[in-house]
Image 1: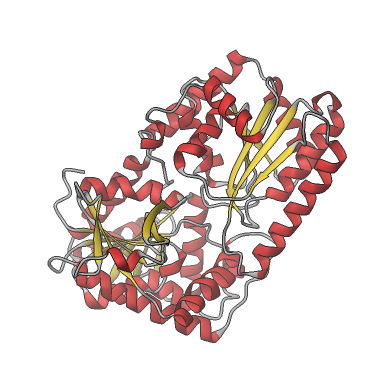
Image 2: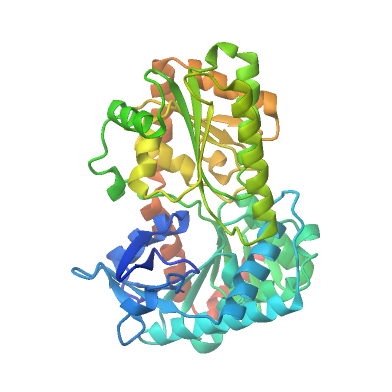
Length: 494
C-alpha cells in the first residue's frame, strides 16, 4: 500500500473492537466480522481512520478529545473514530431499514422485508451523521473514502456534497437483488442515487454487478454500458466492479496455533467428546440466511443413511448471537434449537449427542482452533455475498487436511471450486456430501486443499484492497470531461 499517498477513511457500521464495562474495568472484544477481517490490514498499512458506531458501553470512556482512539494504543497503526447515535435513530437505521428492510430484500430467503417511513427517515439521518464525521476526519478535500455495505447507501451522495473532490468507493458486501425485487423497496431510487454518487461501486460477484446495473438502467436516466460495467449519471462516470473479499492469511490468530492433533484434543476436552470421534464444524452468525437448521437436517439424514456413525461423529455448530431483538432472528434460532434437540434425543448414545450447538462469542484464535480440529467445515448459506468462514477454514489448514463443504449460493463458491459444492436446501445431497467428506482419502484432501489454499492466498485481503484502491486512484486522476469522452466512445463501439 506504499503507493497510496492520500488519506484513506473507512466508513462502516461496526468497529473492529467493542469496549464494555466489566465492573470497574474495561474489556475489549474483537468483533467477529468478515468486514473487519478484510479492512483492518488496509488501514494498518495506510495509517487510516475507521469511522464506526459506538456500540460498546465503554467505547466513549476511552476516546480522546477528538472522539476517537488509536489502535493499538502503545504503537498506533490506525485510528477509530466513534459516532454516537440517539437510541431511536439507531433502532430505525440499523434494526429497521437496514436489517428488517434491506437485508431480507437482498437475500433470496423466505423472510419478507419490512419497510417503514420512520425507519427510512432515521436511516437518512444516521447516514448524514456518519458522513459528517467522515468529512471532519478528512485531511484536505480529496481523501479516498471506502463506504462499507448496506448501512450507508445514502452516504456517498452526502459525502459528495461535503467533499466534492474526494474519491468515494462504495462496497456492497451482501448480494444485490434483481430489478423486480429491488423495485419493491419504496426508496429504490433514493438508494440508487446515493450509491451513484460514488466513483466506484463494488460487489462480491459479477452477478451482483449485473443486477445493480440492471436496476440503474431500469430506474434512472443513467447512460449504462453493460459491457464496460459503467454508468454515466449526473456528470459522473461510475465504475461497477466485482471485488471478491479476501482474508488476512497471516492473521495473528494463526500465530502459535497448535497443530491439528493438539487442536482436536483440546476441542474434545472442551466439549466432552470421546477420543477418535469424527468432527465437523460450522461457524456462523445466528442468522436465517446461514442455513443452520438445514445443516442440522443434513446431519440427521447422514446418521439415517450411515448409522455406523452414531456415537462416532459430532457436528459442532458455533453460532455467534446476532440481532436477537428481531422476530425473524428469534424464530430462526428457536427453529434451529428445536431441530438440534430433536436430533440429539433421537441419536443420543453414552458417547454423547451428535450436534453440539454452541451459542456464544468466540475469539478468532478459538475459531481457528476449531477449524484445525475438524475433519470438515460445512458452510451452508442459503444466500450469501461471500462468506469468509470458507476462506478462514482453508487458511487454517496448513496441514493440507480437512474438507470444505460449501453452499453453491455463497459468493465464495465462485472461487473455491475445489470444495464440495452443495445446494443447502437439498438435504439428501448435503448428507451425501458430508459422507463424502468423511471418507475422502488423505491424498485427495491434500490435492483439493492445495488448490484452495493457493486461491485464498492469491486473492487475500491485501489483493482486494489493492484492486479497489487502484480503481479509486484511476478515477481520481481523470477529469470528468475525459471520463465522459471515453464512455461515449465505448458506448458507440458497443
